[in-house]
Amino acid sequence: MRSREASREKKSSAAEEELAMAATPPEKWRTSGKRKMLTTAFFMASCLAIFSAFSLFAGVRRHASPPMQQLPLLLLPERPPADQIGFEVQSKKSQGGFDEKGACLSRQQSSFYRRSSSQKKLSYHLQKKLKNYEALHRKCGPTTDLYRETSFQLRSNHSLPPSSSSSECKYLVWISYSGLGNRILTLASAFLYALLTGRVLLVDGREDMASLFCEPFPGETWLLPSDFPLLPLEKYNSDSSFSLGSLSRVKFHGDGARFVYLHLAHDYSQHDKLFFCQREQHFLGKVPWLLLRSDNYFLPSLFLVRGFQRELELLFPEKELVFHHLGRYLFHPANPVWGLITRFYHAYLAEADEKVGIQIRVFEPGTGPFPHVMDQVLACVLNQKLLPKVKSMGDEAPDQRKKKKKKKKKKKVVLVTSLSWGYYEKMRSMYWEGEAEGEEVVSVHQPSHEEHQKSGDRIHLMKAWAEMYLLSLTDVLVTSAWSTFGYVAQGLSGVRPWILVRAENRTMPDPPCLRARSMEPCFHAPPFYDCEAREGVDTGAILPHLRHCEDVSWGLKLFDPPY
Image (cartoon, rainbow, N blue to C red; front, side):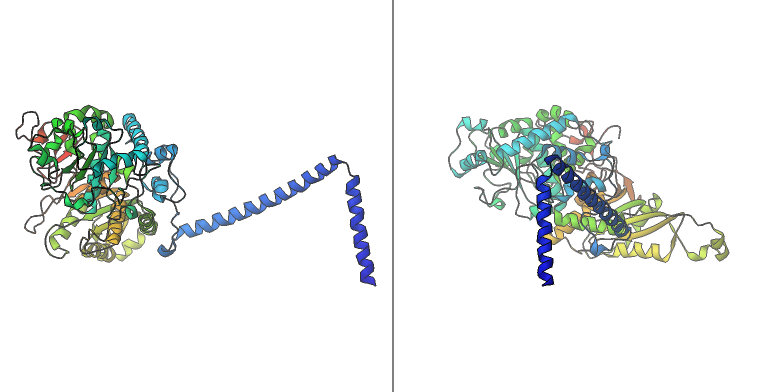
């Protein structure tokens, strides 16, 4: 009975409240609703502020000592000033066209890790050229109707009519070849050639390009489709009937050719080298498709082509920054590689006052480490004061050590990259067993030791790319002569490295290293031919900004005078 009465009282009370609300003027309803909304909003804002403060405290604690296995991929250093953000981030984000929701983390985050490029800005002409290229790539890329129409012409066995040379879209197909360092350098060279000739660059993606690099151009892929009519690309070489070298022997003029194969590898012939002549460039301009294979950084010799010189002068007022700008624009590590980079960086490099990168590449037969190479590396870094010497703990009396005032020591971190583990072990033991002189403490780290180069191994290539990139994040760089691995690191970094002179007869050279006068890579197999005079010539003595390399006496390299 009591429960029934209580229930009736509740129903009666509810009915009275409904009647009271019905009698309330609309203005009071609105006032009452606003009060409730304000109360609710204040409560939610208070909860959010408490939650944010707790998250920030937890994040600071986590950043203070990050275990390598638990490092989040998005853990970032302090954001640099706006004027230090790299061009590759600013320009591409402003243009849109990328799926930036985690599709390429390195494109979004690289500016947090790199040193400022404020003193190495792109010319206005290069910025405009890159923007125009991106529009062309979207217009003619592999998923467009224009690409399908142009590639359909390759399926025919007949020559093209002369009118086809004025096609809206012309292409340069880069064929993957040689080691990863060589590929990166040849790809940058091919891209510059595409910029200069108004062609769309498509890359042979068989060698896991997508697992190494993000797509560089907004709105369209750069990967060559798997149904490309001229596959397989391995069948083309210097002796192919469609190579420039073969066609040049029969007075090639470019008319009616569906495609031409360009062989610019280390074993190219004198006729292949005519690629660097203005006359042959005029004929190639009539051909819609060019296939290119190279294992060389052939970019410096593009400055010898008379028809390109004015444009190159506008694009690159500072000659030693060519690869620096093109490399930072093109090569963004894919997410799996970026994970390798960021995890290692935060575990070992992030807290350093100075980072020293040492790249050791030995071209001698046999299994290292080699004693003369270790002696050379130590002689270089100690003589040039890149690292402190080591003293024995017995060199200083115990009472002197006690009296010495405690100062905060400079933390210097050494990043070693080598196929061998032995060089790292020797340096690490040296700074562990002995105390560094001065007010510095030194730690030594090496990401991997693969023992042998494995050009076709995807995991090996990912580690190699991660190590090149990590080297480019250091403040001081020591590289090995002749090494394309080191060339890539120094170019992306934007620093002039110390070059370990190549040893002969397993004897340490004197001096052990020398300072590079330009951060540009070296072209190891340049042509020695005067296209105008049609005779041999020293191409390292024609232009003031094109000289022979420090590490390869016959090679060509871009410099900014005075040298």
